[in-house]
Image (cartoon, rainbow, N blue to C red; front, side, top):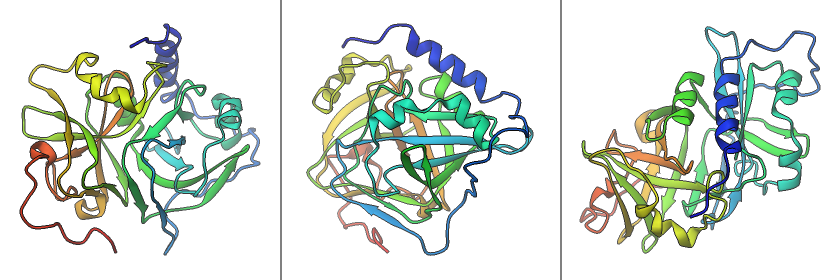
Length: 279
């Protein structure tokens, strides 16, 4: 697989530095006023998502001792992410405009693309929809900037985020798994062309030869014989996430009750169909 040049690494370093930057001046423009958090009764559902492109914008707000990365996603807003509008946004200028410490654009670089691997998504805690200069995105989650920085800078570093959402991987679907030596399983939820510009869905099956997994970890491609759901509501709104060195993102199973079963035995699902997938 062909990887991009060192500019991608430089962008990551700049991003990690920005996550700890001094908050923007009070003299910044205020054309966009953010009120992050879920709106009562507001939900979003998208089907047939597998291999569709999306984007997210994470805005780090609050005092440096108590700041939070607030995530806004185009999928929850019910729209596709316009690549030209997304690429035109200057993260530093947007942070100044929002009065934020920093802004993370996903994907980064913004000329790359990020694609869903999950088949269907329900967002139960959706908040405001903001038009970020032509990119409409709705609030969906929050995360510690420190955990976000660690996950970005160090592959295979597990992190946690707060959200109320459900991902469905349908029976018969191909899934891409990383098995940890402690019995936890990481299920790929999105892949990106941030590092490997030629990465496609069809080439995900080849990652076993491309990833430099930590000792004791194992990559597997499996076909599900039963629906797999990952619902953070079953874990009190807590989601476990991890990123590999190609910047593909995975959701964790085996930590709590979020997953309907641990796909560490994906070809041998439980005998009884999991209940409570939809509300």
